[in-house]
Length: 238
Ligand code: PXP
Image (cartoon, rainbow, N blue to C red):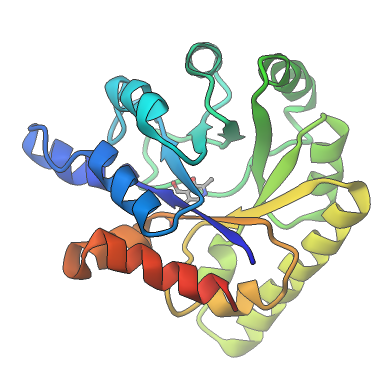
């Protein structure tokens, strides 16, 4: 069965809307773990719009499953990762004006820097994943620069509106899974996945872990964190 890492960024978004201390992403992480999450994901953005440095530090001490830190490829973030030592780092592209991560990393373009920074993180015992589009050239380049995992960007699959386009995107994901398998690259996936669109991706099989945030936190606002996580865990059973 595929694993679930719950992204709790948007609990921090709600907290920050009032500039107070609640709701706390640390409490959300505890509830997600109690409901069966295999890991907790947070994205420390350069502008600190949701997760703050304090959250990273406290979560490192309180997460009992695995901590996945999403971050941009900057010297500041690399230094924070080396100090905090999350179980894994997922490198993502980051633009200040985007609402959420748009598009995958261009591994081909960033090859030299990536190779060096990935080695640095791995020497510290951190597993490194690259968030990329389901594109064969990007997958080959991810393997070449020494990444442990790729995280397939599922955004396009989630956004398209016709059945033909959806099938086309699922096919891209399927080909990406098979290419990564041949190279021995680990396979995660995420972005835009929700309670309606997840099952067809689970059915492809071969994805080790899903990183899901917005849909779970949205549902949690209405039905509670434990129920929202438990329902997603059920869907991952396929
Ligand atoms: N994976 C990565 C690399 C992301 O940047 C995000 C968004 O922070 C997610 C997964 C989760 O996406 P969503 O919030 O749409 O589930």
